[in-house]
Length: 120
Ligand code: 5GP
Image (cartoon, rainbow, N blue to C red; front, side, top):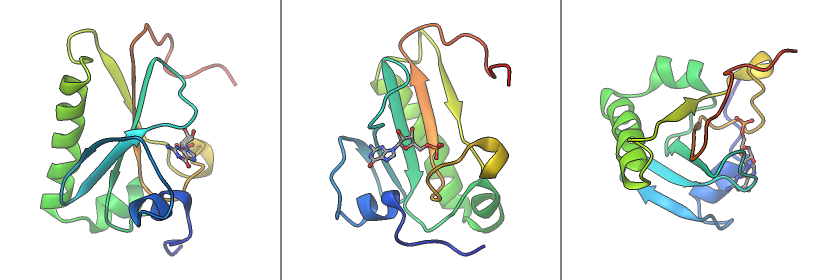
């Protein structure tokens, strides 16, 4: 499956749609989720055109991979989540419940998040 450059996060990355930016560097953009599921709900994206974790794991450079994970740690610390704890999720494909086909990781925190997966 190829990358769809009309997805909503591609438009945010191109500056066509606004976002509440949290962090940016050469490889990563991070912003607040528009429909937060917890007091802190932050999205972290590679800037490259990767559809999902499968695509990123197969094709991203070591610099891109390092930047994404360094950014998550940095954002968690800057947002004051590192001490109280948080959850990092990436939904992949149909069973993962992925809605936007540009790889993103969710950082969730600010309260006890409960069970990781709800009963179906
Ligand atoms: P997914 O289900 O693909 O893992 O998560 C997509 C996330 O993107 C959802 O949590 C949704 O609220 C968020 N989202 C969808 N459209 C927008 C948007 O235009 N701006 C922002 N900031 N978040 C969005």
